[in-house]
Image 1 (cartoon, rainbow, N blue to C red):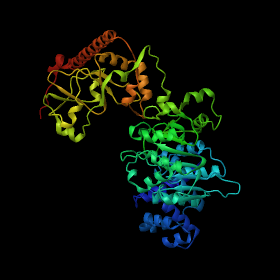
Image 2: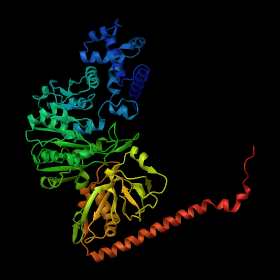
Image 3: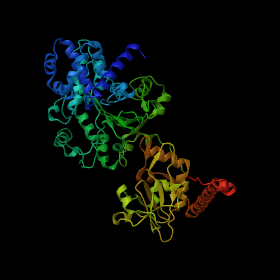
Image 4: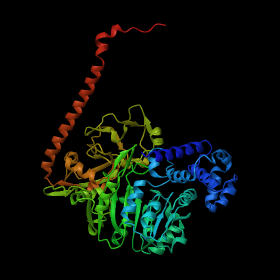
Length: 592
């Protein structure tokens, strides 16, 4: 690392460490550094309000600085001549940018640097573009966008909208100490004062999975004004698609917008009608599945959706592998970003084979089928050729999740003594069978009783890690027992006049089905299955007699594994007792 950069990082860290002794506000060190900078520009002044006024700080910035350091500004006075103007101007952006955060020193106040760089590339910014960042935080993207759109006449500027007054003030300060022409509006992106604003390129980096936006009258007003035929929004939906709608509404004709999404917004039924709305109007150009653990404040896998007009097809880009690990986070380098740009046709930095590996195209017709799901991985699923195949859904009688048991409910109902009621979790499915040692319950709550399982029900783990297979077992309920699976298990009951449960287990245990389920599951570190994923699984359409032959063989091997596991447990116990059996008399009790 360059020595000058190291020195600036050291100073930034020193000021941040100094401020921790006086304030818990996350941006107080930025306020302190800016106040020192203005004081140096106005020598002889020591009163903070006087310094801010002389430095022409805006009202919002002045309020922010006073709230952060006003009660201990005198502690900064000995540093008035310690650092030069250039150093102070350089360390203020450094204290909030993503690269400094990734070293464990920053304040997690801005977008991930790779996200900002990726969006700058994807939006194909060019000089003169009018750009807006909805939810701009401290302005990471805006700073990059300004340099990409700067004109020879230097008459261009970028606009940021940020509802947090502290973040908006930090963005203003960074703009003031740099050459970036940034207009920062401290308001909600749904504020009606923005209705007349139109931009060539819009980025939206909202808080993920926010609920309750449907209660905001400004949100409903915006949807009614810009999208009169927008589907009904239910109170339970997350805000990801509503934030995206705001970004699209801010576009000029032929403009492009990009917005960040959580995984559930791409597949859940609550957002299906809204996804259908955008797809049917040809507004989605591309969906990009990002690597997990990329953002500063969450490890979940996120998506970027690129919006523009006239898209009869949607490019699906699987970029989860396009990263490298650094200090427990994933980072996207320039080469990774260039591959995504090549998939979008923005650059020719990757060859055709690379593009084919990471990008596929989904047509509008296939997207509008079912729930208009936009999880990228399922469009990369290897086609499964099953001779005379049918869908698993054709033989399913009942498909549901197990019962939701909160920790309080488990504390209330769990008991140590033997009971006719038992509770079954994913960890109780081991080596393809249900453990005989289940948790006992005093009783089963009335509302949970419809979730009880029967002999012959197929249990499948809904949530899985990338390292393992989805667990599958056929339940055999002992006489006198009632078993209730928990909500992390899918319970499938097939029509036994058409299908053998153990035959279905044999199918689900096979590599072809596991690959299919993995490609259709969503999520990063944790992979989640839905009913629809199972229903669409192709299985051989064999005669019931042949299915029973296969099912019997599967059942026999399950029993063999169970017997071997029991034998192994006994052998382990025997191994641990060798000393007691052969040399117990060599032990003497300590006598005080």
